[in-house]
Structures are given as C-alpha cells and as structure tokens.
Image (cartoon, rainbow, N blue to C red; front, side):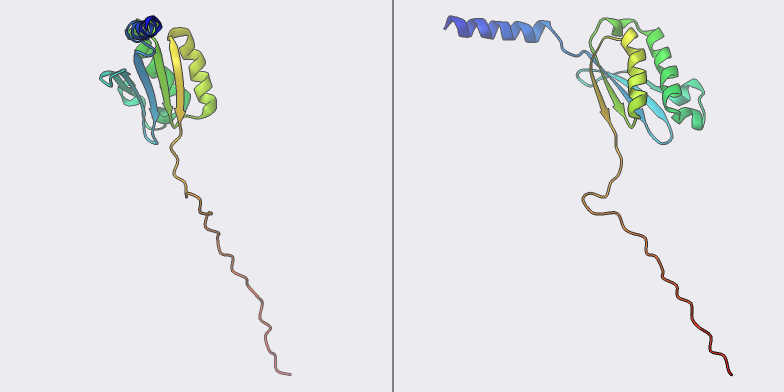
Length: 146
C-alpha cells in the first residue's frame, strides 16, 4: 500500500510541476506565403506573423530560408520568454536541409524540446503514374507508275 501511494504521489508531482512543452511554434510555407504561428500548449494563439507584414513581396515571401529568418528575428526581439520555456517547433512544407539550418539558428535563442517536420504533397496512392502514350509512326511507301 505504501509503494502505490509513493508512486502515485511522484507521478502527480511530475505532472503538475514539470511541463514538457509550454509553447508550439509552427512554421508554414504555402505556395504564396510564409506564416509563423505561436500557440500555447492549449492551442490559444499568442503571436501570428506572415511575410507580408514585413513588406516582403511576391517571390520574397516564399523564399524558404530568407523569409523565415526575417520573421523569426522580429519575433525573438519582441519576446525573451522563449529562452527559458520549453518549445516545440513544427515545420510544414519545408525542405529538410532548410529545417536543419533554421534549427541551428533557433537552438541558440530558443529552448526547444521537440521538432517535427511535415511535408504535404499530393500523391496518387498505390496506383502507378499514368504513362504517356507514344504514337508509332510508320512511313508509307508511295506507289509510282512505271
């Protein structure tokens, strides 16, 4: 009986005192814009930034590392809160090599506990891709009068 009480009290104090993640930073890249959302663990939004807010236009908004770094610079100068609280970073539609580059930059400034990357691409399921039909052209011999 004593061991069960001891284990349950440890489990209860672990859940109440130590938060594994406090905030979630999601970096979304669409075909037309770059968006960064910061939510607390319950899903309530804290900050929202897009590339258009920083006067980036057309192809500047979708350039992967440049647009994200300019947005993150502004975000980190506003708030020193993320240096001490554990944060999860979610990447959506970001190249893998850009993910590692941005993570190295973020690691110095933010206390990150979890990183996940999602790539949303349409696919054809298990079915093979449709093959292009190739027309076979034969030359016809012209009949000549002799």
